[in-house]
Length: 497
Image 1 (cartoon, rainbow, N blue to C red):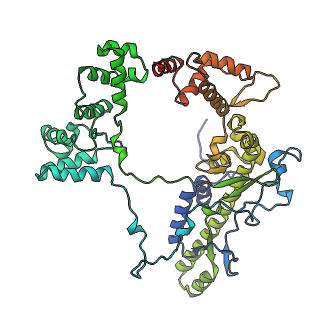
Image 2: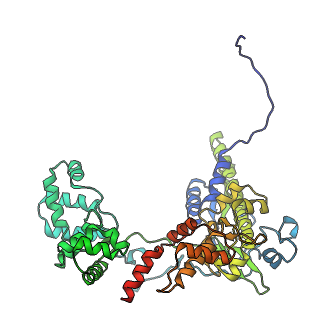
Image 3: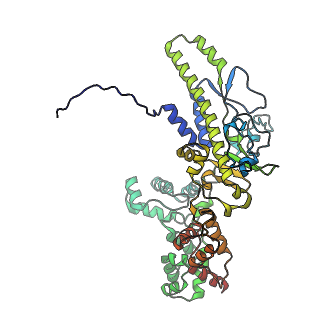
């Protein structure tokens, strides 16, 4: 059969991912901090956009404001299912973006620092950033000692490079040979500088591993001997509380073993953590859930994290009248279209987050009332089908989003757990997280004379109609950082002795 080329016209449908659609999808899965950074970049790029100040009065008529974000109360019928299946729909008469709820929002504590206009005692503007104190970092502390111990420029240069290779915990992340090759010097010179650096405060810095870190501290205390050296060589046995094996490798008695382990526990395995580091960014919830006076839950968006932007139509009209070139008109048209898209995308993002949060609250009502042991096993598909959205959309919404509840602040993904079958045919499946917490509770109640093995836990859970395998119990126990029954029994006996 001969091959030939020809033109064929076909009609079909396909989904085209426009740049605006791609950006809207990315905007949906951004955290509140990432959204703020994105909007800051858009405000610098787009002259038609401006940030709306938080105020009680409505926006002027010459500006198009992003619709107020939704935080209407979630009725008792929605949360408890008193009106049948408890499902909500747009026909319920509540606009998803109608108004800001009259209920008080939690005070984040940050509003008082905005635009305070504080004046210092000498009458000049108070520079808050210049007067904020911070802790000395590990690198600064080591650099100060470096200049006190070395005078040769080459030694200072090598020492500064070695300090730059120390991580936050105080451990050295490169060996002497690698650093010597990078600096173009011999390895002996680097090792001589490093040997002096290892005497710096805090003791244990510049160590290559945990054993060396502990050894440096023990040598300073004059407590490093052959028995202690053997103990440091077998730190895994210390973690397992295998005192019989430690007696053999260290050639000492049990009392000496306990004394040596007590000395090790008094040391600092991460000496660098005692110094300042980058500040930890606190978790700011995107959604708040609080109980109402009618036995229901109020699901609201956190207004502190909601971006508010305006399209300055007056400025846009003024600039358009003065634009003569086609390039200028095209630029203004693109800016206006981008600004309108951003306003609509932020509004849709808020609607979607609130819709998913409402369904999570409805599904996990028992958790909010009774605690983690009543956490229901739900999946992304369960929520997606309930709110008639795609599963991938729900996945994006629950990424990097947090919900403040009466039982604490949780990431939205926390409420999605696997199901563990019930021993009762008619019983409801159990959440993996609730079973994990039940295992913790059982182990916390055990006594020295009766330490529960994984098989014992399986039998106790089976009495509660939880069908679970022993290996699953072991996996959950390890995820909770709980030792095995042999190690717990050995540790309990050591404490009693």
